[in-house]
Amino acid sequence: MAEQTLFIVKPDAVARKLVGQIIARFESKGFKILKLKMFTFTRPQAEEFYSVHNTKPFFGELVEFITSGPVVAAVIEGNNAVATTRIMIGATKSFEAAPGSIRGDFGLGFSDNVIHASDSKESFEKEARVVFQ
Ligand code: CMP
Image 1 (tube, protein in one colour):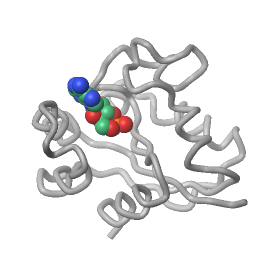
Image 2 (cartoon, rainbow, N blue to C red; image 1 turned 135 degrees about the horizontal axis):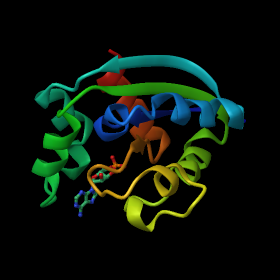
Image 3 (cartoon, protein in one colour; image 1 turned 90 degrees about the horizontal axis):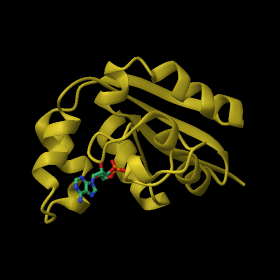
Image 4 (cartoon, protein in one colour; image 1 turned 45 degrees about the horizontal axis):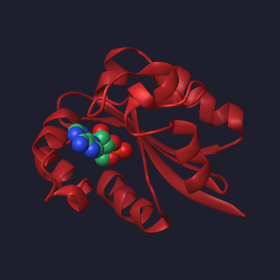
C-alpha cells in the first residue's frame, strides 16, 4: 500500500557531496519523490523537529549539528515507505550500521550519521509539517 515518509540528508553528507548518491538509492528502490528541499534548519525549527529528544543528554549536540549547515529534505512515496526507508538507512550508529545500508556505506558518526528518516507515520506527519510548511 502506498505510504509516505520523509528523510533528511544531514549536513555531514551534504558537505561530503553525497546528496545525489543518496537520493538515487531511493529512486532506484522504486520510491517516487514528492517533495525536495535544500535549506538550513533554524534553531527553533530544529528544536521542534527533534522535540521527542528534548529531555535526552545529547539534545544540545543534536540541535547544534543539524543546524550546522544545509540539509536536503525529501518526502517520498511507495510501498511500506516508513519501514523500508528505516531498513535502507541502517542503524543509528553509522559505525555499526550494516554494509549495504546508507549509514553503513557512507558514515562513521553518531550525531553526524548521514541521514535521518521518520520512524512512524505520526513522526512523518509532524516532521513534514516542520520542514515543508
Ligand atoms: P536521527 O535518526 O536523526 O534521530 C535522532 C538523532 O539523535 C540520531 O539520528 C542521532 O544522530 C542522534 N543520537 C541519538 N542518540 C545519540 C547519542 N547517544 N549521542 C549523540 N547523538 C545521538
